[in-house]
Amino acid sequence: MESNILVTSELTRKFKSLTAVDHLNLIIPPGEVFGLLGPNGAGKTTTIKMLTTLLPPTSGNATVAGFDIINHASQVRRVIGYVPQLLSADGTLSGYENLLIFAKLYDLPRKEQSMRARGVLKFMGLTDSADKMVRTYSGGMIRRLEIGQSMLHHPQVLFLDEPTIGLDPIARNVVWDHLKRLCDDYGTTIFLTTHMMEEADNICQRVAIMHLGKVAAIGTPKELKASIGKKNATLDDVFIYFSGQTLDSGGSYRDTSRTRRVARRLG
Amino acid sequence: MTHLVPAGSPVGSANILPNQPAQKYNPVLQFIEKTFIIAELEVRKLLHDPTELVTRAIQPALWLLIFGEVFAQTRAIPTGNLNYIDFIAPGILAQSVLFIAIFYGIAVIWERDLGILHKFLASPASRGSLVLGKALSAGVRALTQEIIIFFLAFLLGVHINWSPLSLLIVTLVVILGASFFSTFSLIIACLVKTRERFMGIGQLLTMPLFFASNAIYPISLMPGWLQVISRFNPLTYMVDALRSVMVVGGISVTGLGLDLIVLLGATTILIIIGARLYPTIAY
Image 1: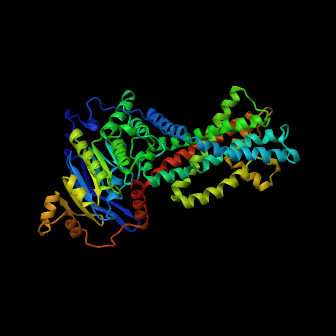
Image 2 (image 1 turned 90 degrees about the vertical axis):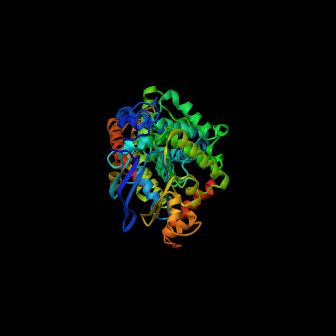
Image 3 (image 1 turned 60 degrees about the vertical axis):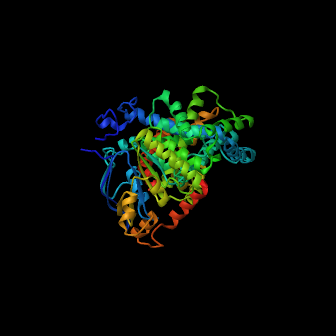
């Protein structure tokens, strides 16, 4: 009886004494663009890593497209696409090759591999740079290529971890446009994390605000803004309201150094 | 079930496109295919930027030219029926394969730091095929060393055994050796997780592996304790196998059959361990 594309039940991950994700329960219907918001260290990336089968949960479980992430991890991997927060395109290959390798890894029919890779390049507006080395790409181009890699096999759920981190506003808008088109054209469910309220407001149908491993609030951006009882509230206000307004909440030295490195490389 | 698919198929709704019916995948075929895709990736990278291969050729060239030539003059090392330069050429081939493979883990850490590794782990390729694919990738790089060293050895007048069978065995041993040491390196990378620590350990391992082997002198010259250690060193079996087939008149001390069994067995065990550890580096 699975009418939802993604369901987590009491999903928990501990790292030694730290509980990064604490009994998380989420239900996401197919075709939704869902945003997981929260400050650094709230557990967003850990959640995505569990849902993409990169990290086993300490307890609890989740299903993606009806497959259980613990016992059917390999089936889950076939129906999802994943764009890590970090830079994940290979700079020493051309854009086309980056796509071709993934077309092969996802068992696209041999005859279609090249065609599909070219199609994605076109969809992402990268046809002119297809055969250039990715290390010569701009940040926005790299992100589009990475999203392209993750949608080659037309996944049912696309996981994006901070998709626009380190991008300038123009590049950001281009990425958003492509994500929207992806949902419209293919009905892909999108699960993204961000700490940019504007991003959530712009493209997410529903958002959850995560704080210290738990969901502090969930709803449409409109509902959340209405819920805090402040006139003309923005999602920024909602974010601060639910995430405890602390300046020093989480995010280790290593996280920070990574985030900055990604920002620098993409920027 | 999901209502994403217009056709509304059962569990097979894994595929959105109608032209992509639900498939059963043969796990063995899948494993082999994915392994070769990872190796193909390496070949493509090499073709884009072959400069590394040239710089990699310098060190073995120095060993052969300087160390080899000087020690050939002294005639201090009893190398049986081989002259010293013939004796050392297979050792230097093994050494350069070791050097190229033992730092392979650094690439794994690099890919983890970038996020490339995460994407591969979230793809349908099995962990085993990713690790074996990496091992074969190191094998591909090592093959370029084989070509370079054969060329250098030829110039230096080494009596190379050009029979196709021996060339085939040399190639097999080079790939096996590179697979073993690169997977060993991958396992260390998974355990230490940072580049700094890895570099330290890599440096620490390379020289003892090299000197506690028969690469540049026969085991019979070593003190007793070192002889024992060298018997546990896979490099010894690699050198022995290469020496027995690569040069005219080369003789195996441990036996080519045993050499191949040790290398194949040790590599298999490491691949299995590596496949278990590999996902943990992405945590």
